[in-house]
Image (tube, rainbow, N blue to C red; front, side, top):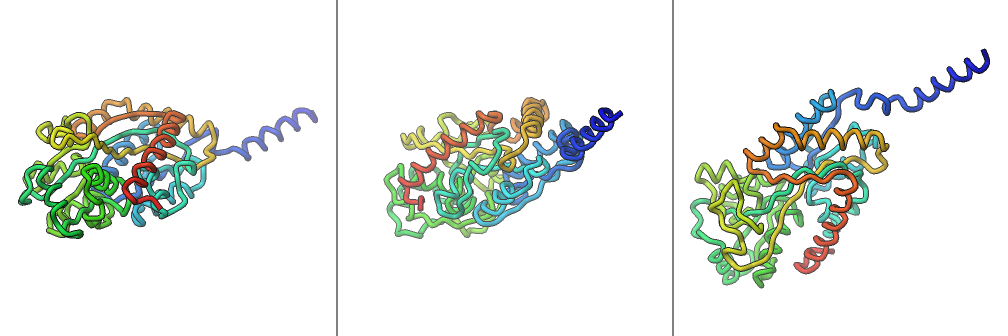
Amino acid sequence: MRFAKSLAAAVLLSTAAFPAMADFPDRPITLYVAWGAGGGTDAVARIIAVGLEKELGQPVNVVNRTGGSGVVGHSAMADAEPDGYTIGLATTEVNLMHWLGLTDLNYTVYTPLALMNVDPAGVQVAANSEFDNVNDLLQAIKDSPPGTFRATGSGQGSSWHVAIAGLLNDADIDPSKVTWVPSDGAASGLQELLSGGTHIVPSSLVEARGLIEAGRVKSLAYMSSERSKLFPDVPTLKEETGSDWQFGAWRGIVAPADLPDDVRDRLIAALDAVYQSEEYQEFMSSQGFGTRYLGGEEFGTFLETTDASFGETMKAIGLAK
């Protein structure tokens, strides 16, 4: 009788101590996005959320936490309780913000779950721009006084800023000659381009797709080794200029550090299933998004090596603090 009572007490204690782990998830999950609604990151987050809801059997609510060149949203991902109920779609800025001195935040404060997407940058201008190729644009920048040209599409020192700064540096043009205008993402940056407030938006072709197809924006070059399947008529930067400069923005799901192993494994398995699903692949293909998957530790290694590589680039172009 004493043994039975002791065993029952131990079971009750164990159940009370770990109620969420055994049944994870048993309530809705929040998925933070550090950029505004309507942009590429928001679109990817929402298709992932739909897939996770099917895999986990719980609502997944996408919450846009913008501001601070990505610091606000990425901080929210890192500062949440490490219980699996708050995750985030982290972006390239994780490998950039700390080099800029904007925050101490870096990839080590997260539990890496899955890399889901990589998209190279394009060089977008308004359809009525006088420039029809990237060589003429670069020559005009080189010949003009500093500040004549303005570019936008993300926060100060964030992914698309590094994309254009690296391109200018590679072309032997001082990156500071083009003024960077911070924005909450490509969607707002492209609207600024249409209004005449800026001249260049170095975003992904996916983010500019609607405006390109509507004839309001044109893309002059693609920062990749191969042409885009979405817009095969857009030449690569190397084809146009001979430059080897390439830049792509990545997106991956992370959780706060110290996530319990069983919750981590459950989320990784669900994300793998989402990535492999017909719905995800069809959406990404139809929208022109690039797809690449790395799960768990492989994603962690990717974060580490990419961080070091971006640091070298940012030091070379004078953005690192």
